[in-house]
Length: 278
Image 1: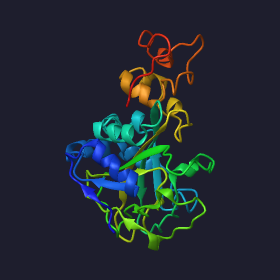
Image 2: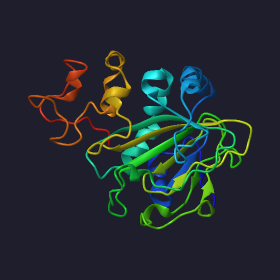
Image 3: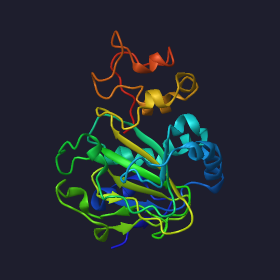
């Protein structure tokens, strides 16, 4: 069974339903070529300077460039994209709040073997979350075309409820092929991995993920974006980055103040109000 594709005008609720049922879905033609060109130009010097991965899992022929909010102002549009936030609100609706987990350009170079099949939620020290309890909603935006030959992300559809100890191989997966500008949504519990790049061209995707706000972020957003840059950002983006409470009594500063006050004094909520992303 191939990875399902949906049109760009699909509602977040429908996208979320497929993610919950199958673990992943591609939404076609969401980002414009002009936006992707801007992002590519902004990230090019950073991608060129990024060293190749240090091990087989990261990819010895793969570059992983983070800090997209600081390095690519245009990429902020994808971080805050209504379909991404709406789908995440649906997938993670069981929690009070969610936050930005990771921003990373993944450039899989020619000759890179396939990545080991894994669940992204294993980043939380392999904690055995209850089956069916999602802690992440993830996206990969196609900055270049994704094909089976050039390393399209491979998904073990329906594996979200599989035990962490259940092994999966490449033979259990399907490639999430998609045109430039499309976006792959997938859960933190689905088994997946980057495919092998058997072409002469680099495959680039923008991995932008979200997680429950009471869990630690994979990418430390407070340090990834310098303070002088953070002070220029909209309140909504700052809250998504983590300058917000994760729940009723999680994440406040000093005398029970709203954490947004640390960056933009006078912008905070009174008391324990939490910005509603749901």
